[in-house]
Length: 439
Image 1 (cartoon, rainbow, N blue to C red):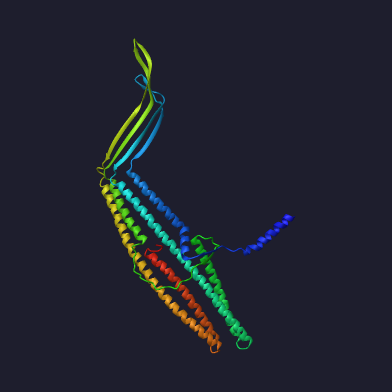
Image 2 (cartoon, one colour):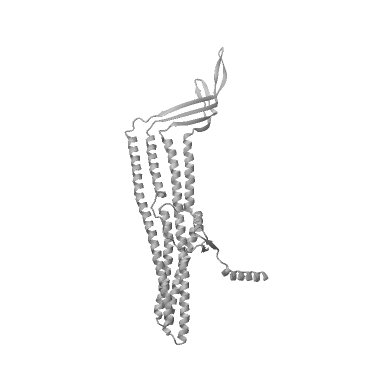
């Protein structure tokens, strides 16, 4: 009975303590988010594995130049014995073992082309990894700055609510003193209810942004993220010269052209002479020949002979395609058309990437113009709010003008947050468009 009471008491204590348990808090900066996202990204891990596979393919392709050694061993049990002109050949427990060396001398250039293709594949895997890395960094930046922006808007609404609460308290005192109308309290109360609704929406948005950021950086979904950065004072964009030479997409397409050219060589190699050398040595034994032999005087005596020994062999083979009804020429022409298509893809993609980079530069310039416009509007709204506050206190301006001024100030600050956030995202997009993100 005592044990049951003790258990019940412990359960009650644990239940009471549960609400007090806090989620893990993680303080991170932008660079921290990038590093964590890179470590967590499954796509980047797969890209790393692809690079390792490509490096192994290069090593595998190099072995094509080297001789191949193969060993073999064979055991034979054959029944019945073979009749050979009155003698019996016994192959019961016969064996043969040997070793063989095969060295390609010339394979129509296919070995060289295969090694070049393997090296191209390694370069392709590296560029795909670099492209994946930039995508991960861009996603981390966007999630991080968006989360900061939503938190700033939550704090803005809290400041706005405090401002309206103060006005409500002052007006309540004035109504009790008969210096203000009760309708003013209703109008302020309605504005306060609207702000509370907006705060709830902003808090929900912040929670969604937090979970999204946790997912990107690999943190537990319940982790409380505390940004180490705030929206910085933005600087005007510097040199925005477009240079897409470092874009991995261009490098991938150039590698595709190189690979297509090597495929032409591979196809041509199918219809060129091949030369190979094979050396081998085999040892055999336990092959017995049994029979009767004339010993003279009409007497026959049994005899048995075991055959064993070694055989060496060297073969130089040459294969020359003679006539295939033009198959080789047609296949080579087809492979060359693939090269032409790869070149066309490169030129088309180059123009699209150049357009993307120019659009990124235009967005960055527009983003800076939006910041300047938002900063001017914020300064003006702050001054207007100050003036309206003074006029309202002096009873020369109605309440509606003060509420409008507060709303304009809140909207101007919100616009400033959005402009600064979008500018940070545009900067990331600009670096990504020029192939320099994360360098």
